Length: 326
Ligand code: AMP
Ligand code: MN
Ligand code: MN
Ligand code: MN
Image (cartoon, rainbow, N blue to C red; front, side, top):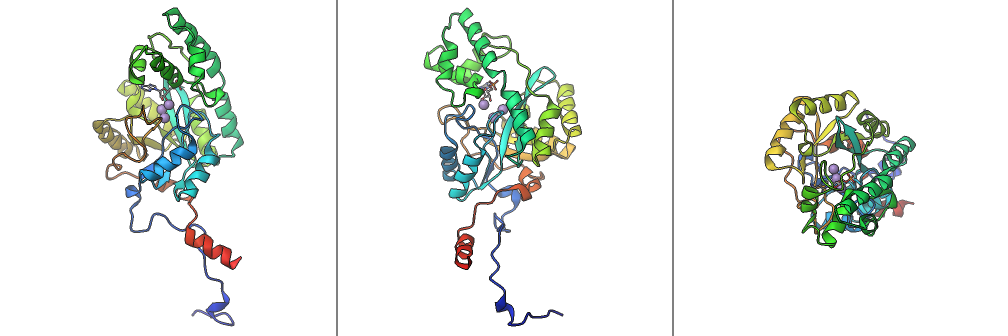
């Protein structure tokens, strides 16, 4: 039996939901337009976090994450820009890892952006990029392409984050190549001029930095790695043993058959599935923000695992009510 307080229900202030559920309950989680992988000028993208947020919103994205390489410096800007536009936000980064002699990327989502261990791990991972870039430039000079370090630097927004993408832009600018795709076919990759082997973070460390900061670790674009089936199996086994939980199924780097292949892998291994364009630049990226197909059926979206970690855009009506009652 309910007991009314003295004065009746009116004595209670109107209940204002602090975390209103978005999307509306009628929208299944899998139908949310989530784009959880892209890059800003803080790594190797060409747009600022604010311009990316506006582009995401214009393209219908409802839940967004900025995932700069080895860097979380843009997280507060990205979240603020997302919220100003009514987008829900998950914190993000994409960590460079060396596994079985290959570079593997691990996306982290929904972590605490102020976590000290994660910040230190990312700082250590960024360290060494400048030295590597100098060696890349020296190697390019040996095949008759001088000035590549200074040339790449012109495109760099964050001095700690000089990457192969910045070299690729320089090689397109100087007409050595017609586009960045051609650059990566002829240069900067294993066995080609300008490639310098590099040791990135360890898989277990990257997963631990993310999960101990409250986030979920996701293997980015697995279709891109040149692993044998045995090596790929080892990657996922070790990833899960360290506490990794997700795999990118729908990404700008996958073909339609790879969507199906990694959907099957997610089901088999009990991994949650992620979706992200990996957008870098309007002139370079094949897939724009929010323009990917939905996740295949029968998968658990990573954002369902991260419900508590989603930074919800303030609902306009809720904030009006809150200011009235204040
Ligand atoms: P880095 O972290 O310096 O090794 O640079 C890696 C970045 O280079 C990736 O995140 C992509 O943005 C870019 N990249 C690598 N391979 C390719 C490719 N085949 N086509 C276009 N961009 C690529
Ligand atoms: Mn990149
Ligand atoms: Mn990547
Ligand atoms: Mn990426």
